[in-house]
Image 1 (cartoon, rainbow, N blue to C red):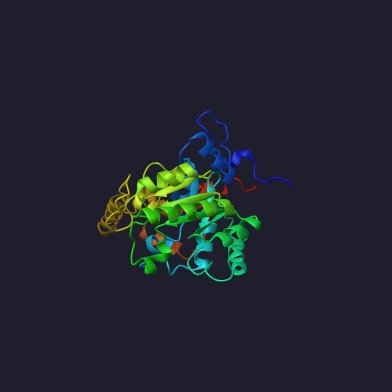
Image 2: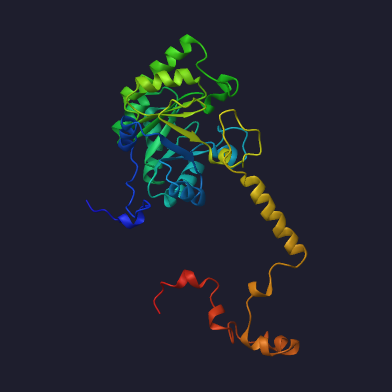
Length: 323
């Protein structure tokens, strides 16, 4: 087979060496070597590019898209087509991280054949390199792996089960529940899942499962003993407009930064401070003529008498065009 993406496309180490592409087997090797796995969600090209260039190992196009991007109350309303749309945007930006697409509610709850067909769409149409499935769906995981689709499992607090759970509640709070969670995780691993996300479970339970599994665990609200951690991008930078969950650490306040920039822009417009003369385009003839001349010039042919260096809105975009 031929490879059509050169190593020049890959992000580089500080010494200029291309970083290897993260794959599902590579995550397994990270667990064996004791290297923590970093993961974040992303839903569009610019944030995915920033996350990838920062060296994050796994990017999840999460169904949390419904809440943090589309403004829905929960994750249940997001559709396959919406998830495909955003997964495509993310995939275009990513060179190193493993891109995982969340299978949305309803896309894998019926016949296994239909679920596999939906998963194939994420790989074939959107470029996903793995799909994430909520719940202990062992037969489905086995079918997906047989179809050559890597799988990330998701146990504990599964947001798509919010109606059954009666809200977003910590899971595995009793000894029996911990044993059930351990059994589910082991079954998913045996079925071929490459990674398991553990959400909203006590640290002690997550630590036991992590130690028992040969595949990596990635925690969110599951303590520090998992093989990796994941957060929602919008939680990380305070763009969720709500109180943060206990497990969220906000590393920046993008909300305050954006609000300040937007208010400053509005004030500049209101005071006619934007755009400045330097931010405007000029006609060579217009510089030498008065108001009457400029009025007469308005009937000239489009583009006539304009400075050559201002004839193109963004010259950099055309620098590679043949002359």
